[in-house]
Structures are given as C-alpha cells and as structure tokens.
Length: 138
Picture 1 (cartoon, helix red, strand yellow):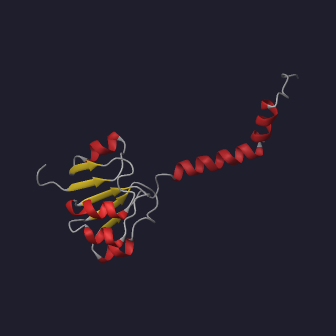
Picture 2 (tube, helix red, strand yellow; picture 1 turned 90 degrees about the horizontal axis):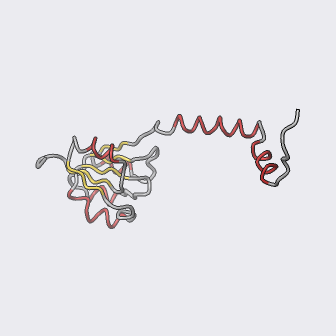
C-alpha cells in the first residue's frame, strides 16, 4: 500500500481492530506511553494522514497544526476532551469517537448496583467473611 494513507495509532489496540484498519492504510502502532506528551506527537505527526489515539493522548492545537497531512483524528474512547475540537474544525480535520460503545455496559452496571443495594450484597458478604454464617436451616 505505497500510496495508502498513513495511520498513527498511539497505543496498542486489539489485533482485530488492527486487521480491520490495515484495509484502509499503512499502520504504525506505538507502544503505550510513547505519545503521553504533545511534544512527542508534534515530532512525529507530520508524516501521518490519520491519528487514532486514546483519551490519554493530548491532541492540542499545536499537534493539529503540526499534522500538515492530517485529515482525521479518532479517539478510541467515548469522550474527546483530549482533542482541541475547535482547532481541528478550523484546520478542516475531522474528529471522531465511539459515543455508544459503553451504553449497554453502563446500563448493566447500574442494574447490578441496584440489585446489590436492594438485596444487601455488601452486608451479606461481610456477614459471610466474618464467619457468622453457620449453615442453612428451614
């Protein structure tokens, strides 16, 4: 893929995602922590057409301006507080995230907490761990 887009992935991601993205361009997957500072990203971003980053990756106006070829920044996260969205818009760079990826899990967790609270799971666990349970009787 000599003329394909160059995509920078700021941290290791699941192999199935890498395999999918390889259909669209040439990937560079960095080690965790490589791009925890904007200075490191500013140094490398000029070579890339797309950036797939984590919520921990600071994507400031300076980073976006350094990305002369940059067309899209995508967060591998629900939020995008780490990206200067206004600067991206001004520079014509698209911003994407995964807004509904945790919706079901959040609902499941809330229902689990309600069940645990209503059935006093914490108290029952403490009772059992403290050796108070001696057996079941009718």
